[in-house]
Structures are given as structure tokens and as C-alpha cells.
Length: 259
Ligand SMILES: Nc1ncnc2c1ncn2[C@@H]1O[C@H](COP(=O)(O)OP(=O)(O)OP(=O)(O)O)[C@@H](O)[C@H]1O
Image 1 (tube, rainbow, N blue to C red):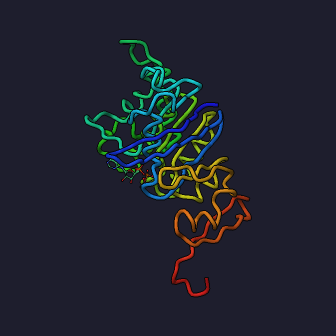
Image 2 (image 1 turned 30 degrees about the horizontal axis):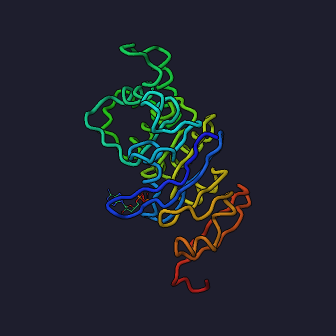
Image 3 (image 1 turned 180 degrees about the horizontal axis):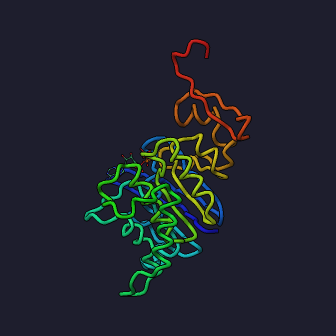
């Protein structure tokens, strides 16, 4: 098992934001984390990649407690695409992607040709070829997001954790990014708002509500009319798409005449 969380609580300003959260993500899995705004998805992910400090013996990557892992070891095991990336100083896009090679470089070692080629390859994969020498902060939100994904892939860890990676992206790039992730031989754990995208790419979905895990299962077991109503408070119709064979969700508005 690549990632496991055991009975994790997390309190922010006196409020229990995570309440006894346990989950596991098996090696090679593509696991989506879904749930309403404010249910604790980002807080859970931040505990996993240690932006927040989890309790000891609660978060394990490849069997090791993350709190026992020094930064370089952590970077070798898990790459992260977080939701907020406050970049304090501007760099060229290629240099931004090169940061992903941190875990693979020795102290004071220069950039290797192979590293640069790898960075260029992942920039191509995310549709950012030709942007290598643009300044990162001059990019649009969606372009930045794709560069950060290239950086995470360049890290070549076995697990990637992403917080809403398709935020900011137009529909073409939403699918390109998910497709790119799917192609890698890597374990993926990602929060996802778009449930049709989740059903298309995930083999397992974890549903959260109010700081707790409500259900875990295959997309067709979790993205159901019942859970949509109970957890999101939205009426929906769910059908299997004839072309993709995946389930598709249609939202029904309250003032819809015939539904
Ligand atoms: N620094 C903070 N101070 C106070 N409350 C916070 C803080 N960070 C998060 N929270 C609260 O914790 C809860 C969980 O937030 P979190 O960002 O984890 O939700 P989320 O499921 O990722 O939401 P979204 O779908 O909107 O991104 C929310 O109610 C949020 O307001």
C-alpha cells in the first residue's frame, strides 16, 4: 500500500475539521477525493504532504510515518500539486520545472542534460512546449497549473497528491491533464470537484462530508443519486454514457419543469 491514513483528527481554531479519517490508496491506484466545499479535502491533503503537521502514526507513505521522513526522502516518495502556490520570486518556466529534480540531485550538483530533457518532455506533455523561457508569474492561471503539474511529474516519485488539479483549466486541458496523469506509472490521489471527470478517470472514490469519510468505492458505487442528494443536497440523474461506458451525472435544477 502506498498511502494510508489512520484515524486522523485535525483541529483548526477549536473546530474539528478532520474527524477520525482513515483511508488507503493502493500502489498504482487512481483515487479521487470528493465532497462539498469546506468538508475538509484540502485539510486532509495538507496533512498528507505536511503543509499541516499531522499527528504521529497517522499518515504513512510506503509504510513510513511521514513525520519521520526528512524533506528529501519525502520528495523522493511523493510529489504534490497544491491548490495555492505562493511563489515569492519569479523564475523562468524551465527553472520552475527543474525544482522537481531536487530529490534526485546531490548537494551543489549542477543541472544534468538528462534533467533538462526530462523537464522539456513533461512541459510538452502538459501542452506548455515553447514556454520554457517565459517568466512563471507572467503565465495565466491555467498555464501556471500545467507548469506545476510538469514540475510534479518531473520529480518521478511513485505517488502524486493533487488538490483540484483541473481548477483554472479549460475543458481541453482538464482532460489532457487527467489523461497525462493516467498515462504515468504512478499512484494518484487527487481531490476533484468535477464528478464526471472523477468517474471517467478514477478507479476508486472517497467521499467526504463534514470532516469524515462517508463512503469509499468504485465511481458507480459513490456517484449515486442518493449520495448527491444526501451529501451535496442536489438532485441528479445518473446514466451510463454509451460511448465511454462510464457513468455520467446530470444535475436537475429545482425549477426544472418536468423533473
Ligand atoms: N486557517 C483556517 N482557519 C479557520 N478555518 C479554516 C482554516 N483552514 C480551513 N478552515 C476551515 O476548515 C474547513 C475545511 O476546509 P478545507 O479547505 O479543508 O475544505 P475543502 O473540502 O478543501 O473545501 P473546498 O472544496 O471549498 O476547497 C472549512 O470549514 C474551512 O473554513
